[in-house]
Length: 414
Length: 168
Image (tube, rainbow over all chains, first blue to last red; front, side, top):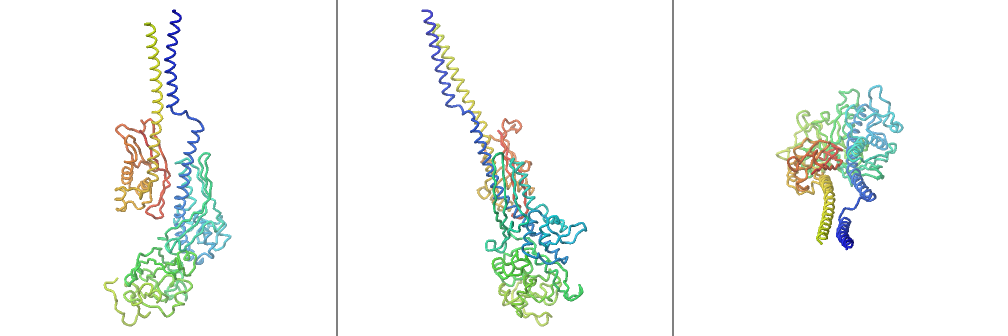
């Protein structure tokens, strides 16, 4: 009996313990978090990395690249306006010989910040002619544009430096290897500039084709994309003013010698759109005084002014008024309308088509005193008088300033 | 019979202990898992919200006020971008005020966090006295590359590293 009782006790004990043990196992299996499975963890980590690469690629390609292109292109225009000014000042021609040479030079300045510099500098500068394609393509002859101009215009804003910065920041912050490039600077088509109905007169468009590669560990994105950016031209120097004003003869050759010699004066003006839409005499006065630009379909566009093309641009032509108060050598000897593309345009599009239709403007034209009163011998064509709504305020052009002045129709003025 | 009763009680007691220990182990594992996950999610959420929410999408009186006063000029900027722009413009107080205001409803009060741009402290919030980053068991940082232009001009700032760090 003793041994049977002992067996019973053992069986009873085994029963309760076993039930508890089974319950604990069931609970553990049911409620404990799943053990990390290598593949699942790997998948999760890979998903996180893929998401990060995706977000970073979007930020770089959709935000940073357009921004970098805009910054470098804007500064390239400013630098090339300065370059054209210096080039004409040193008698090396007014603009680039061809549009292709301009585009090649633009691409190189924008991407690398270097240029075929034919501005006279120290003797150790390499010899290069910006109007010869072989020289423009031979980068061993090129200088940094800032060294060429001897002033910091581009500084560190060329595309290569801006892209290097995002590559470095991406690696430091996210351990992402980013590589952007793939330009062939010998191909003038890698960067395409345009102005049309998409841009209107106050913006310029640029298409840049880039290859990019973004890698984290074993996840990689390799692609190429054509990035199109439109940006405002506000604040960029107008090359028409400094290039052409250098060659104009307004002083009657009393200063610079032989007949027809250029006055060698440089005037500058910066693209800045007027917000005036309703024209009257007062606003015409302000437009000349403030030296702002307005759209005119017969004027040349922003891009044409860099190409040296004096042609009409219905979508994008812009014009400013010549201000003889600020531009002190403008004295009426050049008998052309005081509108930049008429006054400086090489094709004489205003004077040839509208000869004999030049007018002074009441309230504005000062026929007597060049130094103290605005605007000495200011004149516009019939076409511009109608564009600025000043047709009723014109009087006959009189270079000598003889005869009584018509009364000013607007009071107060301006 | 007395001995049998004692065995049964002892057996039941061991079984009960086994159940209790099992349940405690399960709860402890689950709690530890959530303890690890929550700050990670909080950090990522905060960094993601500050880094991707545009100012124009916020109906925030402070943002509206700063916009009307001309302090904020680009409503397309994200919150973190705008804080970095303030940093660029030496307006540290405005950067801190913007982050404080926007983050107030984004992260639970028990979490402490700080925002750095280019490794410089822009804003820091401690959840309570003695809540120090170096004493925390878990510190989670999320980073973003920040860049932009000043006042819609061609003056580029960045790319800088924006870092949001959360701890409990």
